[in-house]
Amino acid sequence: MKFLRTYFLPIMIAFAMLLFFTHDFGLIDIEHTAIIVAMGVDKTDEEYEISTQIAIPQATTQNVSNNDSLISAKGKTIAEALDKIAVNTGWYPLFAFCNLIILGENTLEGDIMDTVNFFIRTDRIPDSATICGCEGTAKDLLSTNTPLDSVSSFALQKILQQDYARMDRIANVNVKQFAEKFLSKSESGYLPYVTTVKSGEKSESGSSVGSSGGSGGSGGQGENGQSGEKGDESSVYDASNTVVFSKGRKVFSLTPEETLMLNLKSKNSIDTFIELDEVNYEGKITPVLIEIENSKKEYYFDFNGEKPVYNIKMNLYCRIVSANANAPVSELYPSAKVPDNVLEATEKKIKETLTSIYKKSQLGSCDLFGIKDELYKYHYKKYDGLKDDILSATALNLEITCHSKTTTRH
Image (cartoon, rainbow, N blue to C red):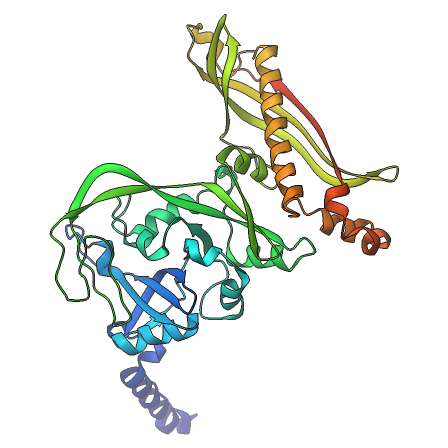
């Protein structure tokens, strides 16, 4: 014990201090590290352009343009472009906090797995990162000025990563989920498709700073280092459309209404709204907004004799939220009875939307509902004989029933 107190303990303290003052116990050197919060991927015939948005510490009164936090580089592969960012800036890019990957419109063409495979295999980027497609280039999307947040990717994440149970209108997908769908028997998947919507506001004049690989957005600082004088109109984002892939190829798109119906397969119907364009309500033909508050749903593949059938059964409990009609206030209470003709119109709208999705899937040979997965899992002996023609041979059976919400107010 005396030996430990006299010799060993001071040696251990000295060794610990040596580690602390020479390496900071492996802590990140913030001066030489760029913390990447989002990545954009654009593709041409010969190379990739990777745009990374970095987190810049700033005072609350300081306004940093999105272009100021954007660094871009080009390479024949994604890994080469990322390496150029490190070489050209002197910063080591840290992707542990990269929660958003944006694929530009050109990247969605051809085999998308040529691009996504990098994110599946690398351990630098978390597979929980949200992945989406966008109109135009991912670089331009990250460069947009938005009133929603000082950093455009943070604003996008708020839209794409909402509360899971209340996200029926957005087809939120992360890298792991997209890979699982592609590697399943269905070989199909989908991504939210982001477009910009002008908000009508004007932002401060922007500037951009980039590596020799190229950077900057409209109205920003170009390669000659001169800053633009005009301010860019600020924008908000629409991610309610969905782009669908089969065997890595883009086959069709889903409208916001179709996206909503697709999401009901795997998500809870909380804050789910269905718009009816023309309904007879209180003696007037008017648009009506219906809210689905509770639901019971079944989606499954089976055989009706020898005929393959995909069944969708829904029991939905609805209430009227609003209508352009002079109805008594009591008619819009949560406990109010929904007229039968409105319930029938809601059932018809849901059936038409689901039928539209199913027909698109059959025409595009896209197993969007995972029919092959269920055939392989529950009817394995028939799988080899039916797998090639199962999508075109399977009929759709819809049983949609809407009820009036009967709960009383407290």
